Image (cartoon, rainbow, N blue to C red; front, top):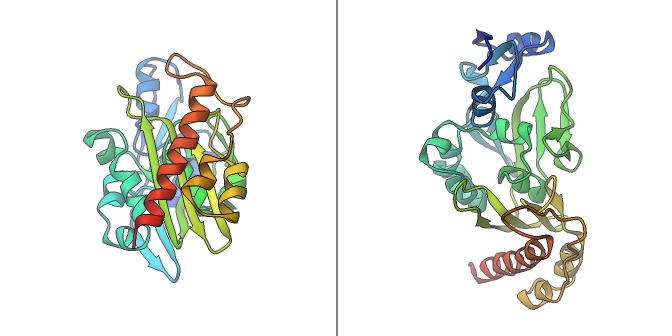
Length: 265
């Protein structure tokens, strides 16, 4: 691990100023700390966001659930507001990693990191969430740019995420056994604007599956999802799965999500 200085501000403004000056923000540290230990990152200065009260918390605002960026995964999973309004989001959070990861990892950290196999990006994209920063608001459709890359500028910090409450939703994950990351994860949401299907773990970044969306907007049935041949040409390949295997998982997990949604009251 390289030497670095450590700051722990108590306001978003102070943290943003330090980040703009070159400090590296740290939220739950679930990705950054392993990188530091392996000397894959040399930030020079860390600014810890964990002591900023306004960055944490969950509240309902009209037909939205607003979650602070520093809210831990387990807090999302246990939230009565989230469970009542978007149970699929609470279930997603309850199956991230293990207890230690859920106790430390944060919503904002996960979205800002944009790991190709992270779960939260699929929820944000499928639900049409808005990522609120200290400078602006960014639609989820515009936020995820590529592998470990987002629309955030230098010194820009996520402060909260605003999730529209869907009519119904389901998240289905086929997890990689050791890491518990999504080998493939599919989030299906019936929103006021139509059906949205977001896929994580299958490519270099989370993405919407347009063919499945088109089919399910015509007929929201398991058979309709099953009839779509998922294109494997842009999907990832590694020691765990081929592109063809991931394409099959996208189809199967979408069918499971549709079945869960249509079976629920």
